[in-house]
Image (cartoon, rainbow, N blue to C red; front, side, top):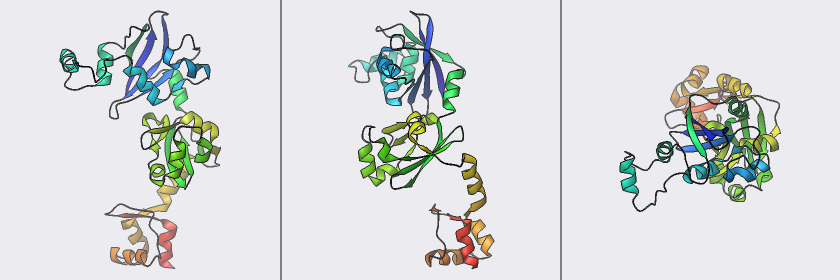
Length: 265
């Protein structure tokens, strides 16, 4: 992860933080506190007016791309050579120009750590998520809050109707880098802020899941030890549907401890 301050040289003020995830090559922008639609970057003025300061990653990427040479530029090969780049790299091009653009006075400055206001917001970012049933997602936040969200409550989000109708899309749910959102097929995002606001809080914590996994999920070797049987005998119990598997990894399976104990009954 790389961190950059977004600084307004014309007004001598910091307006936000750009976060770049190196492996995924994705961006997130967190705007500084106290901005209004006049002091915020023009692209984000409408969001700031609505009180949104955590910028969606697609719009964050748009801000970056508006400040660099497009990949389809006719003489892009010569430009990359001049920048000593072997391939088109959005972040390196942004760094080469310090993020300058003729449309405004904004620049980027590399930082060693996140500012406090970003750290505070990230406390309500996501640390995990999973599909519970057909239309319900369980989301776990960094502040140990666990919430349940019905996808039908998110129909105001673009393309969510497609997610609801497509089981494969629903099963693709995962976190975006940094836990700023959940994403379906890495293209349909739902922000942590929206999930925090619309989700129903459950009376459990992240530690509940950790304790359950640590004490109640067994691999094949542990299951055989508990039953005092061979892998072949365990396989027989599974095939006879006496024991259900939680997950099959090919080489080994995972089981609920309670299911394994059925083999002793």
